[in-house]
Each structure stands twice: as C-alpha cells, then as structure tokens.
Amino acid sequence: MADMIRGVCPQCGKKLEIPAELEEFSCLYCGARMRTEALQARPVEERAVEALLAQLPGCITRYPDLHLRIGKKDFFPTFAQYEQDNAPLLQELDACCAGYPGGAEALAGHAAAVMLDGLTAHMEKDPRWGKRTRDNVFFDTKVALAIFFTPLLRKLQLELAEPLRTQLQTQWLARWPKQLWRPGDYDTLAGGFKKFRFCFITTATCAAEGKPDDCAELTAFRAFRDGWLRQRPDGPERIAEYYAVAPSIVAGVEYCDDAPARYAEIRARWLGPCYAALQRGEMERCYDTYRDMVQTLQERYGVWEAEN
Image (cartoon, rainbow, N blue to C red):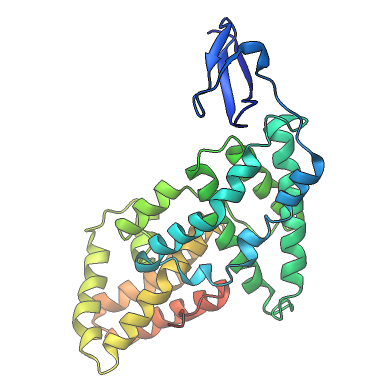
C-alpha cells in the first residue's frame, strides 16, 4: 500500500490524504494546485478548539424532550432538524483533528471530558436531581447521547466519530457505572423504526428472543389488541397512549440499559403471565398485567407522552 501524506489544504483548510510519491496535486475541494510539500497539518489555536468544545454540551442540553420524539412518526423529522442544527459544529471540530496534538484520538478524549463536565453541571441543576427522580434525568440525557448525538457523529462520517463515540461511553461509565448506555447507529435506528422494531414492547422482546414476527404469541397479542381491547369504551384511547410511549420505552431498554436482563425481566414478570391469561381467556387479567408493565416501565425510564 502506498505511503500517504495527511494534512490540510493551505487554501481551504480541508483535510486531505495524498500519495507520498506525487510531487504536485490539486485539492479535491477547492481545486488549488500545489506541491505536495505544501501539504502540512497546521497547528490549531487552543482557544479556537476550546471555544468549539464549550458548545458540545448544548448538543444535548438544548433538546430536553428528545426522549419523547423517538416514535416512528417523530424520529425522522426530529433527527433531521437535530442534524441541521449540530452538523456545522461537529464538522468544524472535526477539521481540527489534523492540527491537534495527538490527532483525533487525543481530541476525542478531551472533547468527551469537556462535554460530560458540561452535562454533569446541567443535570445537577435539574429540579428532578433528587434521589427518587434522578434516574429520569439520566435517562433523558442517555437517550440524547445514544439515539441522536452518537448516531449523528457516525452518519457525518467524521474522523472524530468513532473515537469520540468510544470516549463518551467509556468516560460516562467511569463516572456513573450503573447508568448504562451504548452509542447508536442511524441506519440501524432508522431500519428499526421503519420495521416497527422499536414500536412495540412485545415485538421487541420476542425479537430479542429470536422469535419471528408471526409467532403464535405475537399473533395472539395483536388479536387481543384489535379485538377485545379495541372494543372497550376506552380501548382506542389506551392503544393510542401505548403507541405514544412504547418506542421510548424500547429505546430505553435497547440503548440505555442492560437489554438482555431487562427483556428477561419483562418476559418473566409480565409477558409470560399475560400470554398465559390470554390462553385461559382471562382478558381482564391480561389487560391489567400489561398496563402494569407499561406504567412500571414508564416510571423506570421517565417516559411520558409528548405534549402537542
């Protein structure tokens, strides 16, 4: 493999990677013609980098209700707006990698520390930062990190993306070991919402267990929903409420918790008894158990319906 020279164009500042054997080349971005020796990583000003880093916490703190915007209907327009708002900052920061001492890895470590310091200060000012409701504050922040910020880093194909995703998760868990989350991927998330993967708790649990979408259990629950439950006076309202909160609950399980352990709990504590009640024809018992599951998980993850 040919040796490569990496640096920034002295005309437009874009990052370039040029075969070392070339004597001259044209910038792929601005078209400027120059000798290869002119390509060099220009040191970045520390104050300029720090000014960019200071803005990183705002990528989370300016969006207090992202955990309410991850249903199939809301996720795509919300993510598009989030990308439009934050891509320029992230791209500008990424352009500093070539001239930053230690490169992308070093910049990612520093950026993660600055960002988490800012998020810590913000969370501690939240009125819910008490012992009983602190998990709700963590959940809101973890959703923003896992389902919006880290997927955007990768979607933009930044040099900084993977090291920053890794550093954010690693440094977060060093501070709060029990507050689990993992960086998301936009294409995976988009595919999940398009296939209803994140829309229904039962579907997500069965999928985690390797069961097909048309398994007997899911077929029975859908018949229960579309038949007995929908015919109740409050049935359509209860179904609509569930659709509003279920994606956030599943996202909490998938990206902000120990997913295998949580799905096992959901199976043992609620879905197993629900399915058994259905098979016995005990519709009210099934309904009460399922509602208890949804309400318990809502409280656990701090998930409530978004206000229009």
